[in-house]
Amino acid sequence: MNDKMRPWKKVWPSIVPKEIDVKKPLSEYIRDVSKKMPKRVAVDFFGMEMTYEELNETIDGFAQGLKRLGIKKGDRVALHMQNCPQFVISFFGILRAGGVVVSLNPMFKHVEIEHELRDSKSKILVGLDYLYPEVEKIRDKTNLKNVILTSLIDYVPENPSLPLPFELQKNKYSFSNTLILKDLIGSSPKEPICLVSDLKESLALLQYTGGTTGLPKGAMITHHALTIASVGSGYWFNNTADDVYLGVTPFFHIMGMVQMMCAPLLSGGKIAILPRFIPDVVAEAIQHYRCSAWVGATTMLVALLQLKDIDSYDLSSFRYICSGGSPITAEIQKQVKEIFPGAWIVDGYGLTETVSQGGAITPLGRFKPGYVGVPHVNDIKIMDRETGLKECSPNEEGEIVINGPILTTGYWNNPEETKNAIRNGWLYTGDIGSMDKEGYLKYSGRIKELIKCSGYSVFPAEVEDLFYRHPAISEVAIIGIPDPYRGESPKAFIVLKPTFIGKIKEEDLMEWSKENIAAYKRPKEIVFMDELPKSAVGKILRRLL
Image (cartoon, rainbow, N blue to C red; front, side, top):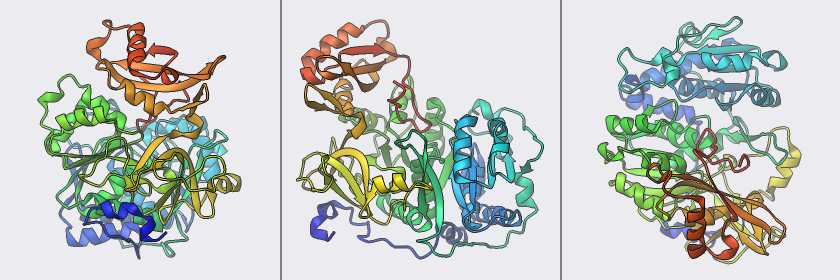
């Protein structure tokens, strides 16, 4: 693609380079920061501060420890943790040792863990002690040679700066046939190490994502792609050493990993790490740390909006807030702007396969309602859904396809899935969208979530956006259900705001929808729920509904 075919470059922030390339792996950028600003705080965990110098030396110590355990270039090492300093140390230590990070969802049960460990053939697992019992159930069915454990309380100070979640109030656990992370680091030399050679060939991540077979598949991410994504994110948001990042978005997920762990550490800023999202604790953390930057799930923003005493917190410190996982509606944006008055509110669209930053993102100060943003490092086209061969005209809906340097090289041990998804170098995302003449991307939804009503195409996100305009609705999710007459009809699952519970009925919202939503988009059923099922990163799980 030449620049004439990239209209989005005209709306780019002036501070963002038109081209980005890297010559060294991500972990070495952290080494550079540790030399320039050794005493600056890199991570803060409930008041425990670790400087860049300390972080860099600890990462080297862990990498040396892995080398002593026999890890060789390309060996897979699993991470099984919530957000904590040990995740950061382990992640970059694995990379410096030449290993490949396999991030496991800490919410997984043993059967789910077994699939990813067996598929990746991980040789070592680094995990939290209280999560280990699920691993222990299936350890003898895997390729694990060593398990290295740590406790969340290892890095909690005597007088925490914030309320501790229950898992940080537990005692340490010990298990036979396991190693202790702090002991391994303490007994290893802190000599500089980086065993990454060819950035474009060497894998940094096996990042598991959903597959058409129902089993997660490992997207292969090179050091080159991961580093460009992280450097690119820093450029886009104009990250600086003065920024304080809200590190509550899960690091095991590609969005939190790149946007709230990797990119911040390249800037020399501070990450205020929280192990999981608890709305009132997050609000207190924002106020306490004076957080200036956050990339998180839209559902997290919605949860903050629902805090009864949200107005009592000083949340004016944010410079930017970027939502992801699902489009931010104009109504939600308006509410977010009210409680975060100093922040640029932006949206984003990315995938595991595009290492988060390789999708589309709103230029700071140029939010366009209904659109998730413009392409950054990668190129994006909209192709017709029938053949996938014809490029669509501006504002015409089709399948979103992506090409560029921030792209998976394929799926681990899965040539069939790779062939289906990557054609002539372009990733066919399975997502439906359109682009306007400025190159802004509008995301409509997944192809498999498309609801066909009486021949019309209905996207859940569109109907959800309409429902969010009702003052009683806190959250809503739309799915398609069989309809003998229309083929399919929408069904709405709704969580009411606390002040409306018991004061409004399903029938009231059905009547409202008749006045505000076209007949073919209108839900046939409405069900009230206490909460919607969500993934660990806050995405609403429609498949469970």
